[in-house]
Length: 342
Image 1: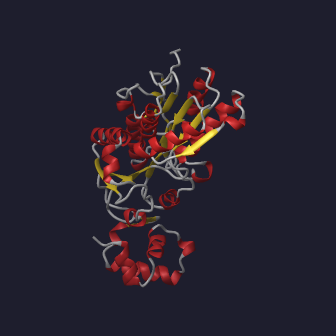
Image 2: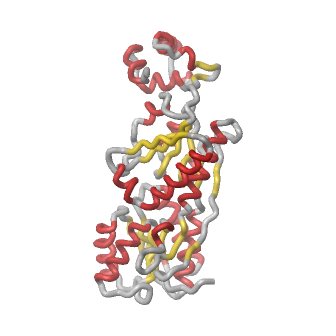
Image 3: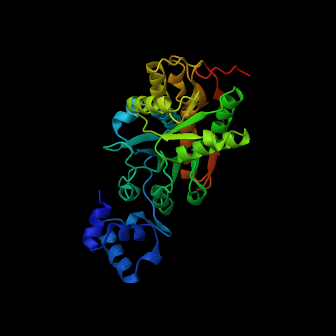
């Protein structure tokens, strides 16, 4: 298969220049350079892929899942397994093959997307784990293949982007309000890496709950952690030792919640009597924890299913190229927070 690297090498230009030509971004390429690149493309057999607006590719009936983490995280975190379950079931139902691409390291979103976009790899893409000002979105929005992001971008990144997600801000606000109205005046927020969109949207909900329920700003406690049980345990233990007024936690990851439960036990704190915990739930496993974990259901399986449905509609011309879907979700109350069911 002819690659963008080979075209660039033959034409004596950069890969980004070839990409600009392939995607009809004529304002970025001089007529002479475009002519040179087009000549090489024709020589290498790309003539059959050209269309009036640029290039199209043979239909492969394939969906590509781009996962910017290691295979180990993909297999060991139940949230991702639930997402994969929804994605793979939808692909099977709609007669699409699923191709999954992982990274050699965790949280490595700068994979070589230009190469993926200019190959016969698949008909469309699903992007996981959005970042603030995510450069991947701009690259894909400029491309010729449709894509859907699992996560809602911020306002400045939404142009040309299709996405599926839950309303994280509203649901976290609801969860933290539940803790506050149960009598917890100092609720700590334990987020994942600060660069994640999910962290930004979750902390926005946390802050709204504090403000609307007249909790003093001095009682705001925020800690950013990696989604790792051991590291979360160590960090939460230090947090609780240093601030004995904290009686409740909201965690933006079930993995962090598991670390928090271990930390509480190490300190001799009972859950929920001494420390209430709510979390974003990987719901297939959250009920199996001791105590059973309360919080916001990710609806991960539904999210994966809806992402494929939306992507296929876009690929088949039945939906606009930029569309958003908010998946309805629930606040699930179990033993870890000590608040009664409504």
